[in-house]
Length: 451
Image (cartoon, helix red, strand yellow):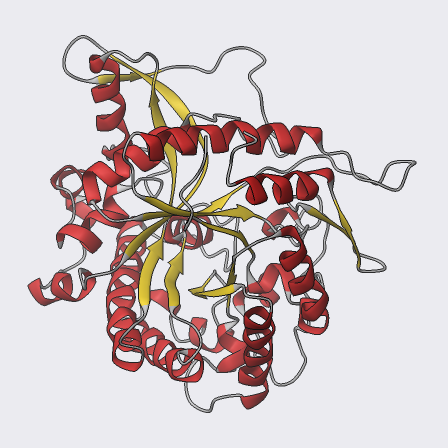
C-alpha cells in the first residue's frame, strides 16, 4: 500500500494545550484560564499556564517535526494572544510570535495549517454572552480578518472551527469543559447556530484577504461501522451515522453540524426532534452558513458497530466483553477510519483531511531512557491501513494529522493523559521521541509502503 505522492502528512496541536506563556506579552485571559481555576474542574488540579512552553521552545519543536518528516503542522491560534479582549486593539507581540512560528515552519518546508478556534474563547467575550450573543458572528469574522491579513501572505490553509460538538456540548450541555456553564437546549441550539454563522462569515473574511486560500471546517464524529459487509448492514450504518435522535448527548452527531455547511439547511429529522426548542432562523442565515469551502476536516478516533434490524432501520450493537481500549478508555476501532471518510465523502462530496487521530497510552521513560509505546504503533498501523483502503476505494482523502505532536495539557484530564508521539517531562520540558515517532518517520518516508 502506498498513499498518494502529494498526500499531506502532519501533526496537530492546540494553543491552550501547548503554548503556555499564559500571561506573557499581552495575551488576554480565556475561558480555559478561568475554568482551570474553578476547584475540581481539572482532574489533577493543573492548568495550561506553562503547558509545554511551546511559546519559548517552538524552534526545537519545529525541528522535531522536520526530523520526523512531517510536511504540515496544524496548530490553533490563541484568539486572546492576538486580540486580548477578543475585539479591538491588536496585540502586536502575539502577531510577532505566530509570524516567527510560521517563518520557522516554512524554513523547514513544513506547510503551516492554521485553526482559528480550538476552544479558548477570550474571557472578555464570554462575559458578553459568548456564543449565545449573536454579535459573536461579527467578533469571530473580525478576528478571522485580522489573522488572514497578518499571515495570509505565507499561510494558505485555514480551518475555522475545531470540534464545535465539544466546545458547545462539553462546555454547555454537561459542563465537563470550559466554560462549564450548563444551559437549556434552546440556548445550546442558539449557540450552535451562531457558531455556524460565524464559520460562514469567517470564510468570507479569509477569502477577501487571501483569495488563493484553502478554507475548511473540522468537526468530529464517532463513526457507525457496519457489523458485516452485507449491503443491509452498510446501509444501516450509513443511516445511523447521519441520524439524529433525541438522547442526552444530542450534540454528538454529524448532520446537525455539517448539513447546514454543505446543504444550506438543518436535517429534517433534527428539526422534528428539536422542534420545541428551536430558535428563530432566517433564510439569509443559511446562505451565510453554506458559504462554499474547499475541504472537510474530520477528527476521528473511534466508532461503534451497527447492524440492520430487518425493518429498514438499524440496531446499535454492544461492545464485546474485554474490547480493546486506550488509556483514557476510548474504544479502539480501526475500521472507523475507513467507514467515516467513505460515508462523509459520499454525502458531502468534498476532499477530506483527517485533522486529528491518535491514542492516549500509559507512556513512561524506561530504564534504557526510551519510550516503548508499542500500543500506539499498533494503533496507528491499524488505523492507517483502514484509511489507505478508503483511498484505494476512491475516497478523496488529502491528508492525515496525528494527534498529537507531543504530550500536552489534555483539557479536563490535565496532564494525566499522554497523546503525543514525543514525550514531555513537564518539570524539565525535555522532549524525547517515543518509538512511535521513529516508526512514523519510516512510514512517512515509505509513503505508507511499510504498512
